Length: 262
Image (cartoon, rainbow, N blue to C red):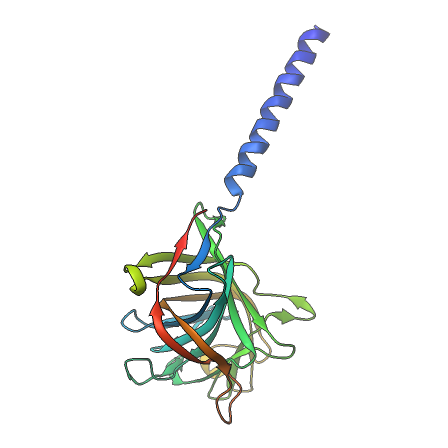
């Protein structure tokens, strides 16, 4: 009897061990890389013809407050022909490359978005997102004391990389990539369906949009699609006169960029 129990115990141990290995494999990251035809590449992105980009936060009252931008652009650079991650500086609400007028609104009100000192970093690898799917992650990276701020009608919604001395908005799932085009015209489409964004509302008139002064939450959602292109690097980034956003590069001929799986 004791021998049978011992054999049963060993069999169960083997089953649990196999299950643990299988579960580990299922959640492991799948490696990808960002790739370019040249050693240093200027990366630019915009939502021309791809619809608006929207950040939506939900207050404790249950009110959904959307910040929507009809135009947006992103800029950064990649050193080397391959990279595991890229960093892009966002600019929201300015005219896009086609000259279309830019605008952003918070709950229907005109809004000014400040991104000085803050960037998005994008991981090339994909992993299980906890929802039965697999995608890549993004993080908000801000200089000390900085945050991405959407201000309208006496209420500001801030997205930072730190809160109370602790990191927030790191490795948020919901990013997918798709290669488009051919040759030197190859581009990468980046689609965001990011959830779990930490936000803070401040301002005595936040009640007008359904939020409370000092209210915080972790239910922010960011959606939208951007097409990213690569260009020969000449110089930059440069800080525009009177501004602080490092979003200006001098670029040359377009060169192909793409995603691969090693």
